[in-house]
Image (tube, rainbow, N blue to C red; front, side):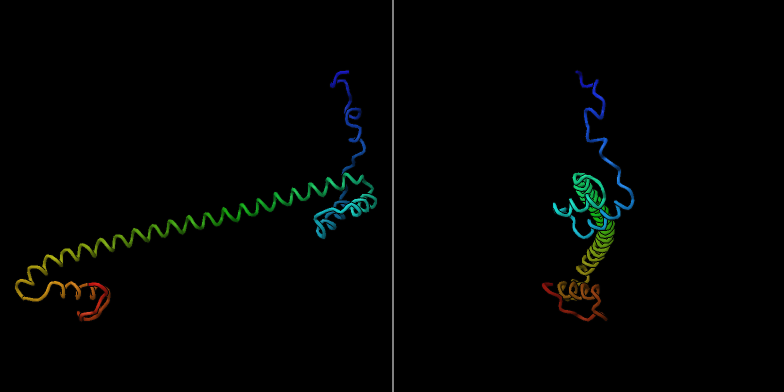
Amino acid sequence: MERSQYSQTQEYPFIKNKKRLNQEQVRILETNFSFNKKLEPDLKYQLALELGVPPRQVSIWYQNKRAREKNQSLETDHRALQQRLENVLAENASLRGEVERLRGEVYRIQELFNGFNSSVSSSCDEVGSSKHDLEREYYAALLGGGGGQFVAFGGL
């Protein structure tokens, strides 16, 4: 006989024995699952008797429940990682903006310094003071050393 000539119950005789679990049966399985994720053989047979279903159905329910729980856990982890990624990307964009702002400040200071350097060169010739001392004083003023006083600054 060809395969198409078999009826579903002849081909798969166990299908007619499978019953859908009712809410109370599911509640009992859920309660047991919350205490123990792995199904021991004794518990499997005890639950099967209590629920009035084949032990194999209890085993499959546990297996499916673990798979669903794992998928939910993966989805939760994925959402958390996605949120962390979005936060890091936002912080990265903020830091890039800050870097650009600081580069602009450095550029402005360099321009001021270059202008100062050219004016110091001509004044040093006239006054006779050291260009190096004036540069140090200028850096100190830029860094908040008050009143134009000379502030010692690292290798300058």
